[in-house]
Structure formats: C-alpha cells, structure tokens
Length: 109
Length: 109
DNA sequence: TTTAATGTTCTATACTTATCGAACATAAAT
DNA sequence: ATTTATGTTCGATAAGTATAGAACATTAAA
Image 1: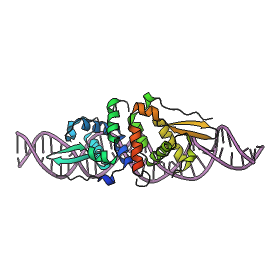
Image 2: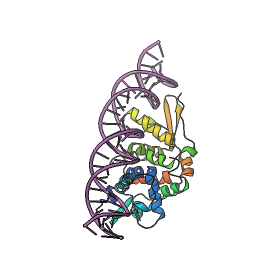
Image 3: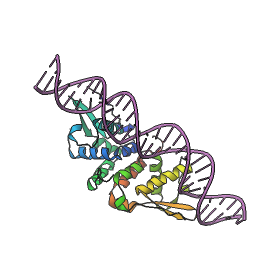
Image 4: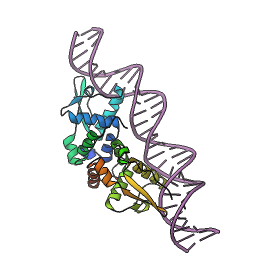
C-alpha cells in the first residue's frame, strides 16, 4: 500500500501550479478529472503516453498540489484538490479549465 | 529599428500562456507590467537576472502572446495584451495576476 | 499458488531551457 | 564623430524534463 506525499496549501506555489498545468498531457488529464466528479483510476482516462510517463506526470500534478492520490487495491485513485486550490488561488484553476474546454489542448500543441 | 513578430490570437495556445507565466522571473515581470497601465521599457522594471537573460524571457512572453513589444528610439516598450487574452481565455490572466499579488512570486520559489 | 491488473521506480536518452558574458546593432546625446 | 543607453544575438553551460522500456511491487482474481 503506497503512501503518497501531498503538499499542504502553504507549500503550494502559483508558479508550480502553472507549470504543472502547462503540459498538454497533464492539462488534458486534469480536464478529464474535472469532468468526472469522483475519484478516478489512471486507467479510466485515456492518455497518449506510456504508463511510466503517465506515472511521472501524475507525480508532477501531485507535487504541485493539483491532485490528491489515494491507493485502493491495485489502483490509485486521483481527484482534483478543487476546494483547496480555490481558497489558495481563487478562480485560477476554474478559468483555466473553462479555457481548456473551449479550445483544444492536445491537438494543437 | 527592430521589428517584432507577434502571434495572432489564433496562434496563442493555453499551454503556451501557462508555460510562459510559470517562470517566477517572467510572472513577476508581468505583474509589474500590469501595475503600470502604460507601455514600459524593460529597464523600468527591476529584474534579478542579466540583461541577456531578460531579453530571452521577454521573447518567451512575446511569442506566447502575453506581451506586445514596440521599439521607440533605443528602448523597446512592452505592454500586456490584456484585451486579446481576455477574449481568448476569459479570466485566466486576471485571476493569475490577482493570485500573484496575494502570494509572493519571486521570494519563495 | 499462479496469473493478471495496476502502477512505481530505475536507467537512459533526447530535448528544452534558464543563465551568463561577450560581441554586436541601433539610436540618441555629447 | 565619439560616446552612451538600450537591447539583441551568439555561444556555452548546467539543469531540468518528457519520453519510453524493463524490472519490480502490490493486490486481486483464477
């Protein structure tokens, strides 16, 4: 049973969040997570990269404070830290997600 | 008289904007630009890096579509592309700037 | 107890990038 | 015509990072 380290709100930085969201693969993943309102196993979200690469991306998202990861059985369930991010950086994640939904993220860069 | 290339709104991508804003030096520069509501020569904004490094950062901001650069005499005047970005990605730049003003950008990471 | 499912870690690689100093370019001031 | 001010470009470097495959760890299912 793997234990994951999550940054506390104090440790979350704006540049860290922006950097984590600036990768197309990661932003797309976060977009999918936002559509589902529940926790998701990685496998439930289609990704264009290898398993190990996705593991890396999830680590970046987790260490930036964007997602919460929890282990259950063989799967690791991921969810957005929406409320905490809203308190820390009001509107940022929401507007980014809205913008991402309007214009494609994966296709054109 | 140097001529600068600016991306049209169509060419501006969300990930490109986020990436450009994810560097502390650049985000701090954009923050300063937002405070001044006029065009600024680079020199008017204090930066912690060398001249040539700043030139690189400004290029990144320009190519991401965040700033407009114009030459006048020996100085190059920079301003935010606020309206265009607001149309393309509503709220994104504004909320990021607001968040940047609340928590320090340069000091801690 | 194997086997399958799910994900992590390690190693390697290619690419990007933040940084600087030196040299250069241009325009204004002397 | 120098000199000064402002910024760009080039070359180099060190650090970061996105990618994948192979090996491993853990839990569930057969």
